[in-house]
Amino acid sequence: MTGMPTEERASASTPADVPADRKDKGKRLWVLFWEMCKIALFVVGGGYAILAVADRVFSAKLKWTREGELVEELPILQMVPGLIAGNTAIYVGHKVAGRLGAVVGLVAVALPAFAIFLAVTCSLAALPLGNDLVTAAFFGSRCAITGIIIGTVWKSWGKNVKGVYGVFAAVATAVAIAAFHVNTALVLLVAMMFGISGALRGRVFCSMGAIPLVFLKYGLLCFGGGFVLVPMYIEEFVGPNAPLLQIAPEEFSNVIALTQMTPGPVSVNAATFFGYKMGGVAGAGLATACLLLPSLFLLVWALESIEKWKANRIVQGILTGVAPAAVGLLLAAAWAFMGMSVWNVSLDGALSVSIEGAVLSVAAAVVFLKTRFPPVALIFSCAAAGMAAWLIGCLFS
Image (cartoon, rainbow, N blue to C red; front, top):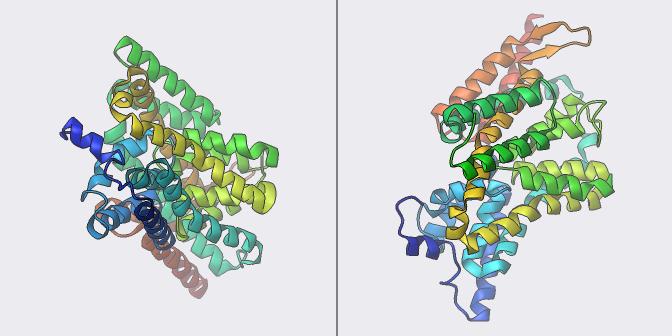
């Protein structure tokens, strides 16, 4: 958005060019729904992949946006709490047909992911997850996700971690969550308070009943993408002392791998799974809706008053405070996944390191950073490598 005239920015985020004719508007809403459904159904790998494809579809094919417009608006889509894929759909829908278009776009991008992963969740018990070959495949997938998260941290560091405060906030967030298990929401709220304080001074210093509150909270605290929520999932759903569910770490890591292998936003898939575990099919639907609602309301409000919103010192302070903390959350997520793929600590405290896991994780990170290899292809490649390593081990054992 930098360098665009004010008038052009305003026109890029308002539905002024939408025809008044109801029939034409209804046709646009249907096309919007169909195109977003197709994107969410066939694009695997999360919000950034969905944004890239949507930018091509809605500019080159439908001429509803300028080429590269969604990429230019990515900072705004990341600044508002919510999923990148969901915020992308809201942005396009709002430009096409105002508030109704925003709702239609969000429903369209979430529906395929919800339906597919609900089916996966319902049949998860029937999957041969105890099979050694399947276990090896999931091990390779976890290594790929470890590398992808590390690569995402590397890419995000220069953009979001600036100055002494940025480094301190990112490292302190990662250590507080990974080492001391401090509540994730509390960490983000503290970062927001630091940001507001800095903005006001002009500088920044160094069960069913629970589903709505839990997933509304996730929707409000999700800045940037699905991996940011992983520490919260671990805190509240994983392990014998988790308050909401007591999922085994191995099952959790397998589910996260499945969220990357199935179409749609990663966090929608995860919300569907956890909601189903907490309240069946109704719980899955409620969890998904509550995860997406905050971004719908906040982004529509932001798009309708974007210049005033961007200039607000308190809002800018919140964003400045939260940005490095979000990178810290990614660091904590990377640490958690390394504990599932690179090393393991037994109940008696003994540490064991997996050479295969370390090699696969580092290789995945390098490929993610240095090439345009699709993330889903990277995950499947590492899964195949994990299976190959197991077969080779069987031959020589």
